Image (cartoon, rainbow, N blue to C red; front, side, top):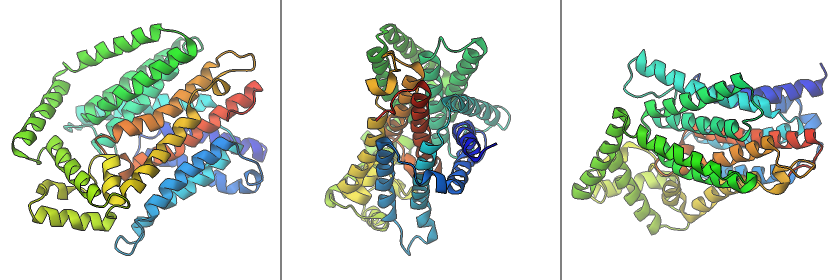
Length: 417
């Protein structure tokens, strides 16, 4: 096998492994990432000389913004561990250009997404049914696990719906199983923040599907999903979590009790907002945030529960307190540029004859789901404070982008801008 084909196979295998192993194994998302990185280093003399499309440079700019932001945390107070996150972002830059040179096939990505979603449900069933854990947490924490399981389920559902006529019966059954098991993984994790993210992901994707395909019956499908969500809310475990959230909000409003899950979040959000307003441009910094938070708790200005976590359970507020408006702006770039490069424009989703290419449309929508879901998850969780959140985003974005360009090359169409 030629080196060109071998490196192409590595890219396709990585496209399967990153989502496919994400929830099956401890740090499962890292196996594919390491394979892609090693292949990128080995093939550097080849891809280094090839021009990259503008979208790759936009993605690089998004990653560099956040790498620069995380570099502000590097210092003697935090030791060598403070370099871990920015180094991952910088290494991911290498992988972007490797993947644009040795583009993976979308079929490997679809298989990986389906297998990953199934892993979310099966691991959750094992942990709650056999190990008798109160909440499924996979090999990370319950929130990260449940949210990623839900994201993979929604991705599987989009691939199923958009390319329905392409799939044969066993493929449809596989994708249906992936959707169901991914949702099961989310429910068993009892992570409520992911359910909020659905309210952002599904309407946007439904509107884009109607806009690009003209099939208004998609709105009926969205309505059916809403009814299904209402029905799921009556499941005892789900109903209990919803009632618990309402009670915790009422308790916090009545007495300021921040010891509950929701109460802690409300207390931390109030503190982060106040701290951000005190230093709105550049924030307190990571070390300064910790010190000032402890001072305000000691002074009775914040509930002691906020000392339990190093983040505020809201992505934007966390950066506002620690890095001010600069941090919030860089976060917007980090999510905004992928939203722009995956937006399903005519050039990105049409084939040579001007018809909508369903695989290209699927890739654009799956790419959009990455920033959309992270925005939704970030309302109640600092997703980027965890390795799983960073790694999944850093490698899925370039994988989807490279697969989109590979699809256009195979159709003989100009590369999407």
